[in-house]
Image (cartoon, rainbow, N blue to C red; front, side, top):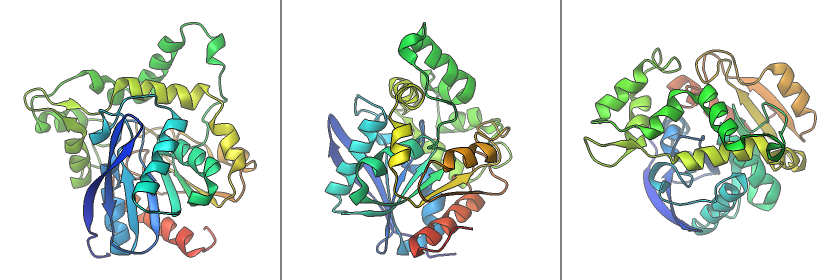
Length: 307
C-alpha cells in the first residue's frame, strides 16, 4: 500500500463563482478526476490512497455540487468542460496526463478532451461517458422537463429524492443510505466520509449539497443534446473504459459488453475491461474498486497496453 498522500483544498475562479478543488499527491503525473452527477471530489478518497503521493490527483467539486454548490448555471457538459480548463489554468497544469471521469464525469471528460486535446492525455471513463441510449430530440417530445425528472427518478431513486429532504444529523443521513442496495453490503469509512461531506447547513436542518436544477439540466444535456456523440468521435485515444458489472442499484449493469464493443468501434484507441465485484458506486467508493482503478491508471500513465 502506498504511503498516505498529502491532501489540500484550493479554490478556482470560474464564470459565476468559485469551485472547490481537492488535491492529493505531491509530485509525479497529473490525473484530473471528474465526479458523478450528485457526487463530489470526496468520492476519490480511496483512489487517492491507492495511488499514494507519487501521482497528483486533482478533483474539483463541479458547479452545483459539494462545496461548489452555490455556483450557478448554466450547467451541462460544455459548461463543466470549460470549468475544468479553468482549473488546469489556475493550478498551473499545462496538460493533465489522464482525464478520469466517473459516471457523468465520463461525459465531461469526453467533451473536455475533444475540445481541448492539447490539455489532455489519455481518457479513462469509469462506468460512464458513453451514451446508454441514442440522443433523443427533446424539443419534439411533449412534457420535456417532466420527462427528464421521471427518467432521473426511475434511475436514481433515493439519490434524487434526498435533494428535497433535510436531516437532523449526519448519523440520520447515514441511516438513510444504509439500506441502499448498492451500499448496504459494502459499507465503509469511505462511504461515511463521502456522505458526511455531502451535507451542508447546520443540524437539525442539514441538506444534501447537490442542486436539483444542476442535476436535471446535466441529465438533459447528457440525454438530449448532441454534444457527447461528436466529441467521442473526435477523441485521439487512448480511451480506457472500466465497467461495473452491477449498476446503480446493485443490479443490472449500465453497459453490456456488446454495447461497449459497438460504441468502441467509433472511438480511437478504445478498450474496455470489467472491475470485478463492484457496482456503479463501489467501483470508486471502496478499497477494492479503487485499487483496481489505480492499477489501470498506472498502466495508462506508463504507456502499457491495456489488459
